[in-house]
Image (cartoon, rainbow, N blue to C red; front, top):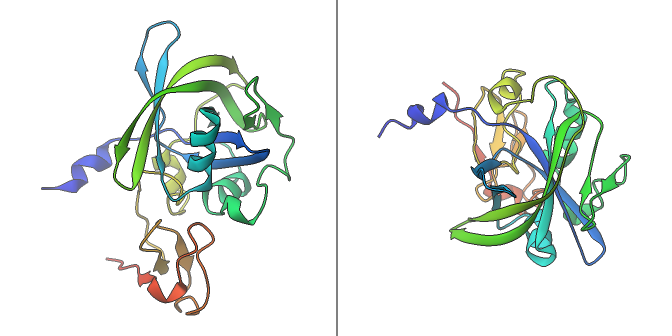
Length: 210
């Protein structure tokens, strides 16, 4: 099987947010897809079971998704794509809004927003696919949406919270559980913990480059 066939596909990068028990969670995803053209429309998203945002979606039964614009700065992607909600509120540094269900979202550097209530889900092993029915939708900006291919062309690794990966040539070590990349020639300290899933640094493996 030639998995390079998958590389022909491209994916929009988006920020998914959910609030549960008074705590805001959010992560970068590339798994948003429109599933039906019915009214209201249905969308699907796929999230890792190890992420705090997934737990929030489970508890809230809803979520918001905003599409990143093509010029979205690395800072937003770094905060929501590589850091864990276990260490604090990632929305605290931003002018965050909330939809009618209380789910957080950003407007700056975003193209549009879609809020959904969860109406179904499918267990996919380490991931879960949610089917959401649209409850709110609005246009936030103009221009193109940032895609995964365009982001990796910046020389950046795929955000670890995204379910579909694109590899780039980078020196570092990868978490075996969530895919987080610890950059550098030397491995992470044995007692260091992954900021996404809390895996031990001693379990990270060297990224092989061609």
